[in-house]
Image (cartoon, rainbow, N blue to C red; front, side):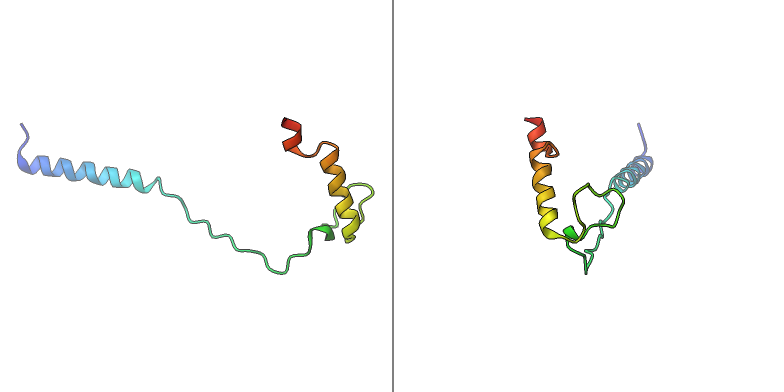
Length: 81
């Protein structure tokens, strides 16, 4: 049988180990900040990877390109069904 002093020390050691283990499970804070002054989506990135027929900065051609993507299979929701 353990002496009361040893029992208390073992209990404290187990409690400390449990606290240490639980503190490692905490989630880090997510401190993302919103970007201000963002250009509209149709402004484009100036990348060489733009779709043919789409003119960066032209809202009408951007909307037309988005509509075409929805109709021709770049919509994952419609692909899965």
